[in-house]
View (cartoon, rainbow, N blue to C red):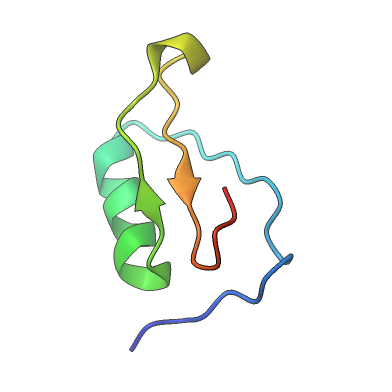
Amino acid sequence: MQVVVPEHSVYYLEIVAQDVEAVCDLYTKSYGWDFKPMDPELGNTCVADLPGGWR
């Protein structure tokens, strides 16, 4: 079962974790978020494209 996040309900979410890949995988499976590879210019953060085109 995929949980749908209503548009405009998540504007910014920051998660600090030791296992970033596992956390990204969890959000991908739970919410369908598509994470991009880590970006060194952003301090190795992972940015996700949310369903509906939000980032």
